[in-house]
Amino acid sequence: MNQPAASSSPLTLTVHPGAAIAWKPIINDESRADALETGEIDIMHSGSPNNLLQFRGNDKYSYYDNSGQIVGQPTVQCIMLNTSKAPFNNKTLRQAMAMCINQAQFTKVIDKGIDAPMNGLFLPGSEYYTKTAYPKYNPTQAAKLVKQVQQQTGSQPAFTLNSTSDPETLAAAQFLQQAWQTAGMKVTIQIIAQATIINDALAGTYEATLWRQFGAVDPDLNYVWWSTTTVGPPLPLNMARNNDPRIQTALTAGRETDDKSDRIKAYQQINEYLAQDIPYIWLARDTWCLAANPNVQNFANPTTLLTPGLFARVRIPSSGRYQALLIPDQAVNADQNERYLLIVGAGNVAQRRTIKLGALFGTLRSVTDGLKPGEWVIVAGMQSAMPGAKVTPHEAAISTQSLDELESMTTDSPTSKRLPGVRTAAERDSQPSLEVPP
Image 1 (cartoon, helix red, strand yellow):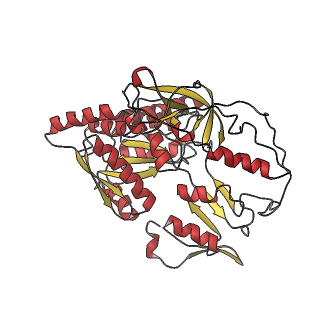
Image 2: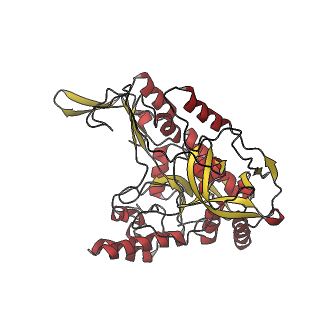
Image 3: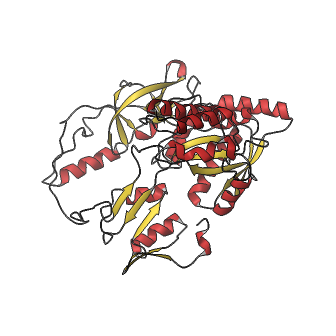
C-alpha cells in the first residue's frame, strides 16, 4: 500500500477461525509510537531512528531490530539518480555528488548513530564485501569537478531532489542539499507523496530521489533492479537506467554457476561496477524495528517466560579498575569498519588517525590504541577539517558530567559496585579537545 493515508479503516487479516490481525496504517513515526504507548495498537514496525532509540532497551516493551550481521545484504539508504538524461548522464557530476557526502556525518546527524555508513551493497563481514572504487568524501575535489562540468555544459549543474514530507526524510534531503550546494550545484527539493515518487521512478520522470532498497537474503534477488534487460519497456525496473553490460554479464554468471566462489566473485564485481558507474549515492544501512506491548506473546521472547517487570540476579564478568584515555564519542568518525579521529598536528594541520576503541562511559569513549595523552583531538567543525588542511583550533574542556552520573549510579545503591574504568574527578587526567570553527 503506497499511500495508506487514503484508507482510514484498518485492514483485517484472518489468521485462523476465531483469530484475526487488524493492520492499521499510521504514516507519521511519532504518531505511530504514541499509538503503541497509549494502547491504540499492540505492535508497530518502524525505520525511524527516533523510534528505535525510544523503544530499544525499554523494558516496558518487547523489541527486535535487524541490526548486526545478516544473511545476504541489507536495505541501503541512497540517492537514486536517473542516468538516462541530463544532468546525471554526466558521470563527472555523479562523481562530484558522491564526493560531497560524508556518510559518517550523515549517519551521526540524520540517523542518530543508529545506522552504519555504507559505500556499497554489502556490509564488512559479508562474504561478498570488498573495498571498491566508490569515491571517497572529498568536498574540495567535488567543487573542482562541478566547475569542470559547468565549463563543459555552459551552465551551473542544477537538479530536483524528490522527498516525502516526513520530517526525518526531509531533514535528510536538506542535509544533502546543503552539501551539494556548497560544492556549487543548484538543488531544489520537491516534496511529493511516496506513491508518486515510486511511479516517477518507474516512468523515468525524475532526476534524483531519496531511496532505500536492495535488502535480500541472496544478491540474485536484485537481478531485475540492475539488469540491462529492464532499463526500458515493457518493465523498467532498473529505475536508475544504468545500462552497463559488465553488470549484466556478472549477473548472468552469478545465477548460472553452482560454484560458491564464482558466485561471490560475480557479486563483488557488480558492487565494483556500481561503484564506478555511480547510479546510486550510497548513504547508510537502513535499520528497522518491531516494538510490541507485553500482551503480544511469542514475539522476541518465544517462551513468554520473561515479561517486563520481572526481577533477576545477573552476574557480569568485570575486568577490574583500569586507567583509560577518554575522548568525546562525537569525535569518532567511521569509514566502513575503520574508526578514526582528526588530530591537530604540527603547524595546525589536520591529520587523520586510525584508532581502536574501548568501552563507552556516558558520552566519553575510551581509546585503546592510536592516541597518546596530550594530543589535540578535533571534536567539532569536522566538515571544515579535511586531512592535510590547515585549521584554526580553539581549546575546549571535556565535560565529565556523564562520568559523574555513572559514578553516582554505581555508588548510591548499597548493593552495587562502581563500574570498572569509571574514575573519580580527582583521578582523571586533563585531556584537551578542540573545536574547529566552520
